[in-house]
Image (tube, rainbow, N blue to C red):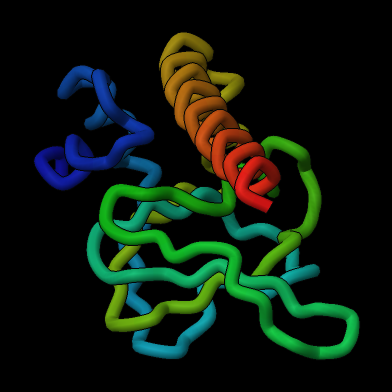
Length: 149
């Protein structure tokens, strides 16, 4: 499992010893095509890291239409905002094909925050770096769309 965890972008730069600690708290889950990992307004189960397959993130509009936000694939993660903000999911996550994920449950993540702050800090730092890169990319797309309009 350590070899597979090394491929996860969220766990980049962690030592084998740190990955072994995390591995103790990981559940492997499998979802078939069209199966939901979670739905909007559901309580969060935890932090998902995609090991194989593809997951569509979508929102349902007030008039009932599904709006695709993004498609995530191997090594991407999801569910992190619901853990950090301590809230229900704000979007749907659906497997687009057979998909394998690693799940760190909300409870296990919170225990890890208290018992190993150094390790959790490394994960959170990586999370912040990825989120800031994504935000910059979205800002560039938005500005380019405004300029070309």
